[in-house]
Length: 270
Picture 1 (cartoon, rainbow, N blue to C red):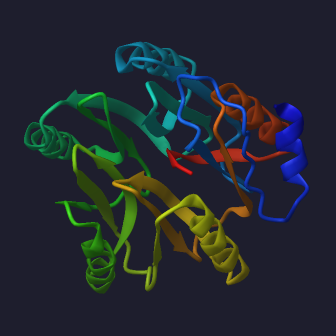
Picture 2 (cartoon, rainbow, N blue to C red; picture 1 turned 90 degrees about the vertical axis):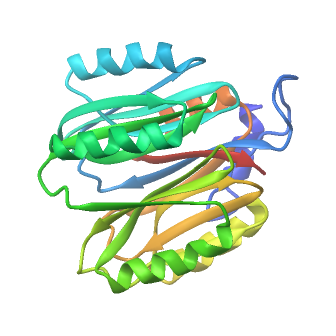
């Protein structure tokens, strides 16, 4: 299996790696996706995966004790995953978990009053999990929960007119959750919506050639959403999509050895 993915690596500048042999418990169409880049501010990274969030929560606490902060949280195919970094801008973090979106939003408001920003949100196993952070450069936020994905480009357009940019988006429990942050310097963000990963690959190539970088990838209700902008300072961005989890984690280590950092996780249907 490793040999096949390496073979795909040399096919082109825009690497999309995929294994065709799958364990029986995982759909042949499912992929775990990593967005990698160079010239990030991160000095060290860690990656953790657990079946239950209660187990990952223990790993989060351990990483915090060791000086890491949680950069990205993802759940898919009975796995909770976390990307941890040193050298980032976050100075203090907390997390919360609620099964009801309204109760979750009340916690978001409470954390905001305590000086935290919502720096990541994920839905999985019937729960909303929020990651809250304190640190320099964190700005006022607004949140939108909606069901019809066709509304999304319009929401981003209206936010930009108000001097806000999209920070992250996630899908769960039949709805989309979008977080916007105040940043008048942003004048444009590009949104693409694809019905399959092959179409997403085509969009990735075009946007990279135009000088854009991936801000966020998300899959939900049969759609791949990609958010791009030109102001992100990373270079040499790559996207890997692999449908064997052990091989995916091995490829994370492969990228690290070649100077890349993992900046975003996603999973969905190929």
